[in-house]
Length: 356
Image 1 (cartoon, rainbow, N blue to C red):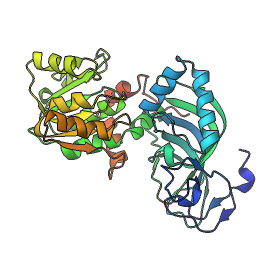
Image 2 (image 1 turned 135 degrees about the horizontal axis):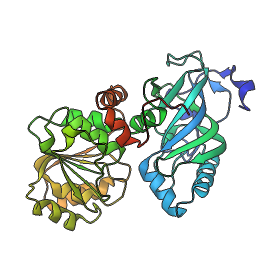
Image 3 (image 1 turned 120 degrees about the vertical axis):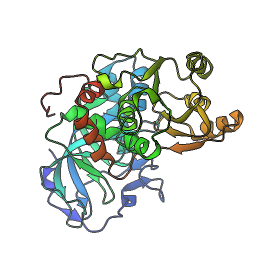
């Protein structure tokens, strides 16, 4: 790495939330900043990572994929341009980022992170607030959202990290870490008597299903996605679930399909869709007094609350925070207790851990 000459040096101080890295506009935190400072050396309370891989969030990768007509090289160029201009990976259209996998290069003497040089870690905070510099984008996987790169990232004192597990493949662990807040929130919200609908059968949706099934029976759970269900890798115990194939951005025909099957509004609706304008279906599907968990970067807060008012739905609307205490550990525990979940989240042979 070209910055190796600087990794032993640190600058004193540094705001714990990273405000000292904001270039513009002044007075804001890194997530809302337009441009971040990625210069070295690090400050004494920071951590320096050599970055191996970015995992873009589903909404951002979907937008980049559509904007380039599925050209992986052009997606890589757009990512490089965004990072060069902003000092972080924050999609200007979706406003979202993702997470990264890296190796610890340097630890400031005042850093609260208890790690060793060389440790491989995944960030549990968004790329939208992580100072990032890329020397090159090596490869883009449009399906998984993984982007193999060479670069460096800076982690603030408040930054959350998870050591990479040795007994789960890198790609599976990263996919789980990226959305590990979803199952933690579902576990927090669901009760044993609830009927639950999960919108979206991607990574977040699958982990949300597993979390719900820690509390309820499979016949209390329904899912909906615009892609037909492929159950080859699904556990036998999950088969009593009900599944719908419908477009969540078309709420009236989708809800009609659900009600035609004899379903009534649900106690808990979990929206993990990566498309905008799916709020209405979630709100049509929840019963009065129920709960809707929005866990996706395509959700519009104003659209959700105004639609709820228009429908006269007295329901609790919850914007799922990507952080919930113990979320990473719980997601890994779900994977270990449900081995087939690995193939469902990342459809490759997970029999051996794959290093990047």
